[in-house]
Length: 323
Image (tube, helix red, strand yellow):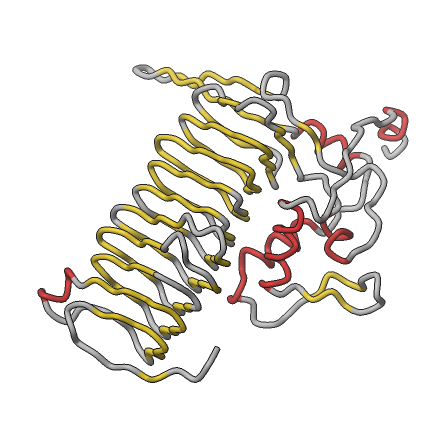
């Protein structure tokens, strides 16, 4: 990024380009509550931001504090470059990005009425009424009070009344939940990566035997539960491979360092030091940096890193011999 000009302001509407904001952008009087902030590119904001509407026309942009908008956070579909939100992002209404040629990263949680994200990496979780995710990675959970639409994405888990999935969708945790039966578009692949050897893949090493992704069937892998009280009865559907995970634990397979990798991803910039996953194929340590973890999961999403299928077979005598 080129040298930026420091900026101080109190205008009602703010345009930022080639600017370094040394503090926060917060309203100091009632008139500034309806302030629109437009980012035209090459901007760093070192503090939190409040705006009636925050529009990002182009990268690069880094906002190091929390962000809240009353109306909308909108990223232009033609935006390019890198856009990074270092802390929690929230909106009383919507957060929208359909930019296909932009690297968008959220280092923490997202909370809004509606969220639409294309080509984004979220280290935390997403909380909203309605959520649309496409070509994205969410390390945490996707939690909606109404509905979720997932297309060609990797997510930790989801919990929603209604969900539709399309193309290839993968879960990082063993279970996910919905109230209504999941809607699956034609030719959709639904995988669980909780027993994939992500640690070896990250280091560029061969995958462990008895590890791999599990293809899920929304009919046979569905566990239906009925929750009742004196006044209400609810049905909850769980899409889970927890039985296979328990069997794998009993076989004492390697833990694949998955939890370590996902925790490092979710903590992001909050880590006080850089850890590594051990030695890679080149004999050097494989550091757990935020950018490397993001690139790793997007390589999985795009098929550049291929995870083997898990056959799911084991001998019961192997289990009993351990007791």
